[in-house]
Length: 226
Image (cartoon, rainbow, N blue to C red; front, side):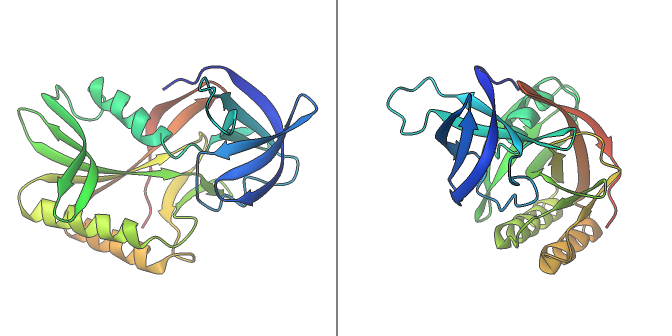
């Protein structure tokens, strides 16, 4: 997936989870943050951030904050990017060969799961989770407790029991992580639910991404450690 009209800035502060103050070319701008998560380890004082300029003149904020440098590593933090990248990935047949139907936001049970894919071989539900937290080269999810995440895992278990292929796909919005593991210290209930999902036949998949200042593309699968 690609971005247009990107700019580089310096992070100043984040008054609330929706906006941030960023210095762009010696001017202070209020920008929209495309991630309502905590991201405290990313949005640090004077961090170099990447922004996309909006083409909507009616918007209150001119820019969206989409990525941040953590040292030399560029991390995409746009919460919409994982689903967009997975959609492109699926259309190219990279995960499921020769798909005959790809439907986003498919209702199952009491939830809307991110993708439903049909091929001649099988019918698959996929739930996508974007990962921006990296600790000592290890990708972790979530960065804050998520009851919704555990609910999605239960729905995937139900789908598997009804004969569907069920997958939770962790899209690591950076490159270079050694492996993925659930963040049990922050959300032990989600970590427990993830193990339960695997025991019930749900596939746990993690993939990293090639991230540039103008794009994010799924790269390769990485090891999952539960």
